[in-house]
Image (cartoon, rainbow, N blue to C red; front, side, top):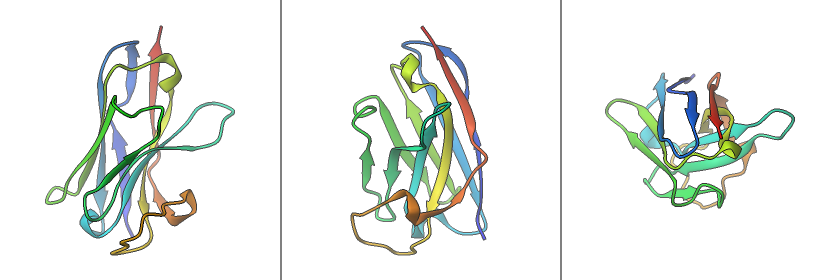
Length: 126
């Protein structure tokens, strides 16, 4: 059983940067894909970024070039660096773990992520 705890959210102005952290306990993150998702009020939970077990990364089009996902396997931490923040980035951000250990494919539907943190609020003012 893995536990995920996000931190680093807050209130910032448009154009600012923020780094979110996700601390994982109970299982090494190096065996699994880890993802960041976000959910704005009244909207569905959407993918932001994924880092696979092999270390490859993928991003939603809306954050490409602005956000960077990374991990520190010895520390069992996942990070999301967010630059050039926009008001439309306002949401609760969730860290999640794919249930498939050692998965080497390229398909990462939200249904494959079965462990979630409690979320951290990011608010970007204009």
